[in-house]
Length: 345
Ligand code: ADP
Ligand code: MG
Image (cartoon, rainbow, N blue to C red; front, top):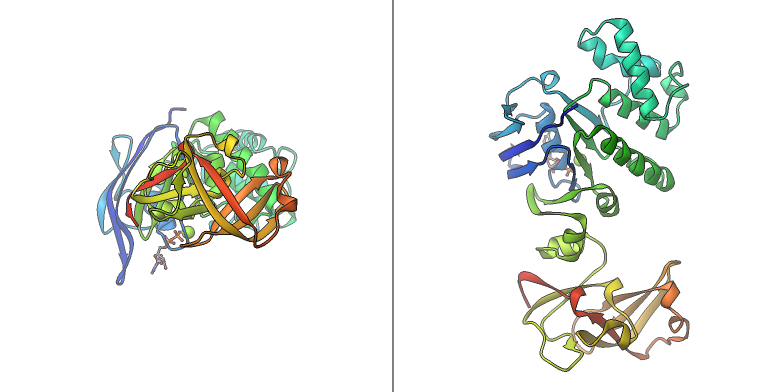
């Protein structure tokens, strides 16, 4: 099955006076796994609904390959969807739910059954085809929803927070399963989450959204290590925003006049680990907390905001002995010190 690229061109959607999508443009590559990441209300669902055909943009265009789908009916778009609120039919068993999109498309019964069973095998539900939906666990229901979305061999998959109702372990298993399914089928996929770790784990590229606009598009590593805005830096992980002058170069040289972002885990307490090419920060230890895989230290520099420093437990020999009120120097290697473009102190 060949997958298709998606082109989103200047899509705008306003509800009353609320701008849900403020001219969003985005090219999704054929076969790509792309994630929309952003806080609640940033427009993620509205964008997926526009692609699926359930929301009509006020302006802008949507393309699937070279086909303009902006005004096409939802069932003509060749798009598989797994939405949180796009529930399974509780009065039909598993097999009937998965056959449903094929029945809609008037596929002969025997062929529909064969394909539905194949889709159920793909999501590891073979053997449960006669089960009632009510008798399934949350994870099994999500697998049925996945099978129903892939059964008609769509060219594109849209998934809106499909795992948010599941507990942490099951969520991580399903993240892996969904990514594997994507890799097997090669379907262009747009996935929505507000969970930054989920986005980093699953995606080829991440699109960070804020207030109906795209803040940044990039690979997980790029967006995490090199955020282009303060919003992205602070939305992804523990970011310290260091105003100009709050850190010094280890060799004593002056540092940037821009705001620097240094992640909590980029600091070390041992100057040798950070290397000579980097920055140092001195502060009073205000708090320390053991978090299992790391220690989180809070340092109060002489001026400015408190700084979070996370030390992996495996390297934390000295942390247990640190006393509150003690003066501590933390170091970060130069390649982990990132100037936020345009963010002057
Ligand atoms: P997200 O999925 O990122 O949480 P949404 O796309 O659901 O964001 O919503 C963006 C904004 O648009 C929200 O503030 C929401 O209240 C508003 N919105 C969404 N759908 C409607 C609607 N049908 N009517 C009015 N406002 C809506
Ligand atoms: Mg949403």
